[in-house]
Length: 215
Image 1 (cartoon, rainbow, N blue to C red):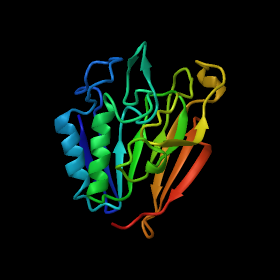
Image 2 (tube, one colour):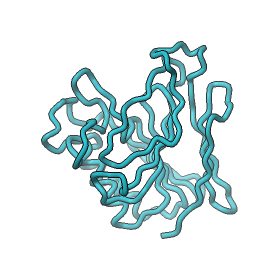
Image 3 (tube, rainbow, N blue to C red):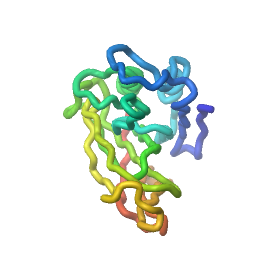
Image 4 (cartoon, rainbow, N blue to C red):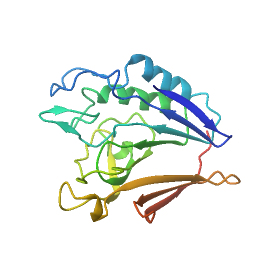
């Protein structure tokens, strides 16, 4: 199901499948794991490198730095442990390293699977693993389900929660106002990318305009 497509010269979207090729959920983080699988991880790195689009949007169904537990096991990427990447984090570390090594600019991650919305800024200055370039992750959910959160942020890739909109009452009803979606707009002339995190009424809860960087 992973695939990529273009929106003119400004945007290329890379849609990931983080469920089909991943290892079984486990609490054992002592050895490298997979959430993309070798073939998809290589496809993503090799597809980002030659892209001529101003913005490379990675659309992922699981968050990068948020700990998503499955009982005592790990459901997503982050394992909640400080220090070097472990488990599925090792595969994401490899992808991030390839992006940095080949000087791929303007990569933005869109993720889901948690029931609130947030904007995260990742920086090697705060990270245990530092061989990557800073990047943004924008998280939105749910569309129509009980809302809860926020989830714990794993420090391995140095995330900072710049914005969070989550309920205080866990499993809040949709009528309580914690249903979310994100909207991205690119200015054709300047290439500036504006991200809005919105509630179910369409109101913008938080907005950020990113200026493109050159290689």
